[in-house]
Length: 205
Image 1 (cartoon, one colour):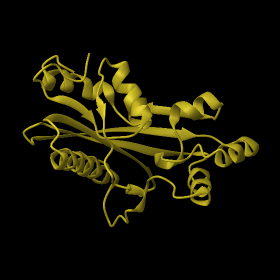
Image 2 (cartoon, one colour):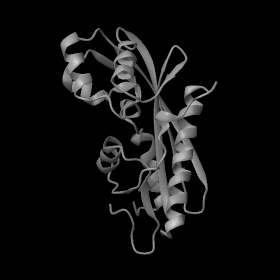
Image 3 (cartoon, one colour):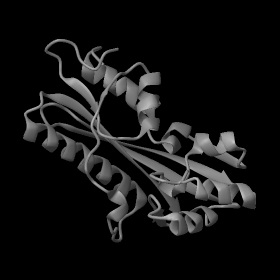
Image 4 (cartoon, one colour):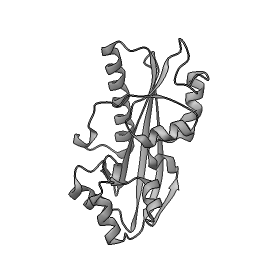
């Protein structure tokens, strides 16, 4: 499906994540892409739970892209934003800020379970808001030291909640098991969102 038919509001993915774009395309959507200029890795979170953090950040990103579009006079659009966080013993883990942070973050997840939550926000052309949340539990076994060091030095952790992407590390051979919606761990629970998009876009996705 094209992102918009003549006179029909476009679908905009408010994220620069190639993984989210791939998931939407695999579901039959061809959105425009416009990332919000918000660096959530620089945000200092207070006493806020992981679910509220994920959905709030998704909402802020959708609103920010809507503002960016209004500022330059872009046409009306459905705007979809998402944010993924990891939760370990009640502590929220976002995206690592550097190699040292990535190493410590991933090492803290080894040989144990942690939660992954993806919050999403669909903003209509008229400004109506729909929020959703998907959860999964990930069990990560002991990591092989040499491969872990290569993973860090290659920068594979950049821009990823918890410092890793599920499909990448499984393909790499890491001992990882996911209970729940694997797409939520990748970054977008497309099975949950696709029917809503079809309904909202009226078949003009």
